Amino acid sequence: MNLVAFAIFAAVVLVLVLMCLLLIAALGVGRLALPIARWNDGILPGRRAPKWEGKDSGGRSRRSPDGTKGQVLVLGSRGLAAFVSLQAAIRALASKRTDLEVLLLSVGADLDVDVLTYLDLGTPIVPITAAKLLEFNTRALPYVFFLDANGVVLAQGQTSTDDDLSELERRARVLPHVLEISKS
Image (cartoon, rainbow, N blue to C red; front, side, top):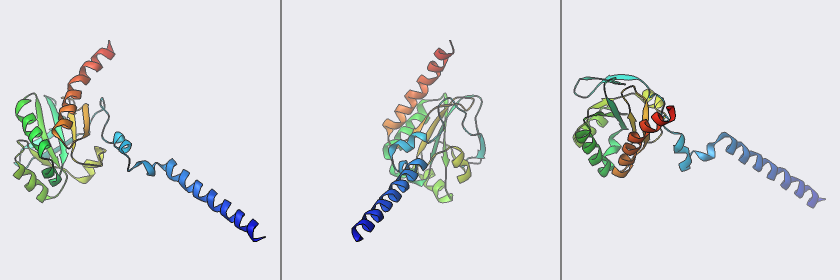
């Protein structure tokens, strides 16, 4: 009799464990730690980025979309100090691409703005709130958006190296041509 009771108990426990695993999979919680979860981050190319206005660390008003030229929005914090090759790539992009306005959106306290100012990236630093960061649908920083003059996302992604930024820049140059071809 004890063997039958144990078998029934084991079967019930096994069914409950399987149901819990299926529930976790259905909710997508199991995917949060996987690289595939980052594919859903950001705003898809072809869609509009959130509008915002703010003053940079120098007191000058900034907004997006600008309406006159494209923008590169680098969302970051003081953690950007750890990404040396990305810092150099941001400096180079800001100096060579006069057709783009490169802005660093700081998602932290005054200390973050101070650290980012010290890095001297050659870009205006605009503090934003955590609520505004949520509108960009990003979970990990640094994150970069290439926008056209109307605020449409041309390319986006989490970046940590100069190669990542170069790849996003390449994609941002290609997308307008792809959209034009698809219209004809």
